[in-house]
Length: 156
Image (cartoon, rainbow, N blue to C red):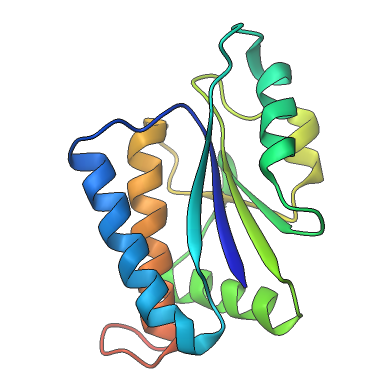
């Protein structure tokens, strides 16, 4: 199952980008034998500042046809790492070829796009900068692959 992180904004060179790249490389390596990956980041910029509705149009273009859609949203479900790993495994086992994680801009995700999602995931009640959300998501993807492979940290 290919993983697409569809995100508003550009992640420039720096510690956040290095962390995302590192965790996604680990995810690709660990997930390959499990039918997970590769993972890629698709970045969009709303140069006309059209707000959430315009961002939703850009994000929809980045989501592959037929992909399971998981939005990152403060109103979403807070899950443990093993539960997140199990969710990934369930999507994979259901034959989903693509999984798109959607990270909105500063104002969040347009309600119409949020309504189209298969799942809404939250990293807690606090609002996180979208650049840090990318890092946390990349790390959790790697951790999920490690869990599903029977790694030493957690078991499903």
